[in-house]
Length: 176
Image (tube, rainbow, N blue to C red; front, top):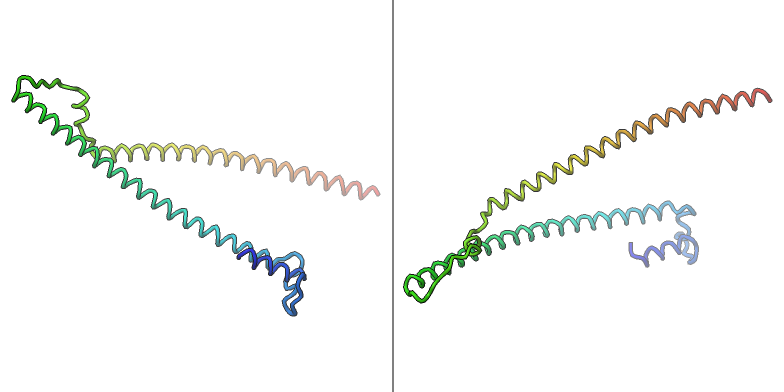
């Protein structure tokens, strides 16, 4: 509900403006107005969460597309390095003045990452993180259960103390 509409309905309700049959339609605790504002907050938060979910999905799709583009670029770069190395070797074979030294870095860079291997490593990492999160959840669940048991124990003690207080009150009332 826009602020102006909210302000207008509140000022009508408290009697700042007198309009017959509309003034003071919701008495002091303002139950109806509170309900309307609460419903507005619920709908707004729902819309915000829906928008965040949509943005999250778009972000995940962009990240996946970036990964695919990066893997493709890496494959192309490796192919270009391999072709340049072949050209350099052919020039070296054609002319004795052109000498090519083997570079271990170039040999390593000519190896392109296998997309399936990259995906399997990523899946493995996700599984490890999921297992870690599950372990943490299990630990927290155990802690919650122990706290629940402690609460039950304290509740039983409180019941005993409350019973003792009732007995003392009844003894005091009986003595009077």
